[in-house]
Length: 232
Image (tube, helix red, strand yellow):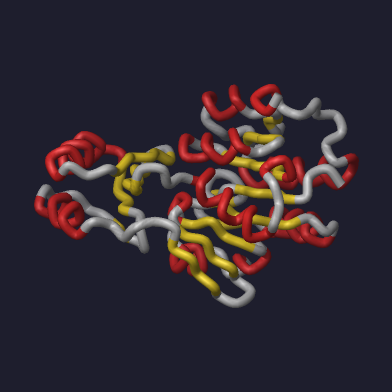
């Protein structure tokens, strides 16, 4: 078995409109039954994910908050991998009329507030960065992203990035797609994500992930040349 880990994004990848289709869930179950390890790598908070996706425990580990939190559904173990959101930043954004959601480390809002976020971070002298997921803007401590979270998850499993097939669709997926041995973009992925992926599926969203899983189970993606040029 070449790819021991299937790491997937949630919104826009396995989920459409926040929901996972039955066919996609069935495909994930087949991948798990094959002995592969399933990891979810998402920008969502754990509590939000549990609300929209009751079958979240199909995943062995969940990298949440865009890399800031690692969650193990089997025993509900949660490991926070970054500092909490600075209270002064939260206050500054609310004072400026920015609607935000806060997690263990992440601050989320809409992309329209990009300039306000940058201004507040700069004025407060904070080492934070902004990561986009289509129309969502996420503020996190510098160095925290999906790749850093996935690195911690793999260390827990005693596995390597060379064991990983990763699937995503948007800007915040670049980091963990780039570190994986093989990366895939679903057909609805942003052009920049498709350009950098090793594989682009024919179908969109969860149907594209199911398509990829079928190929994975059929021949372990033997048709894909590897390792990817970025790993050579």
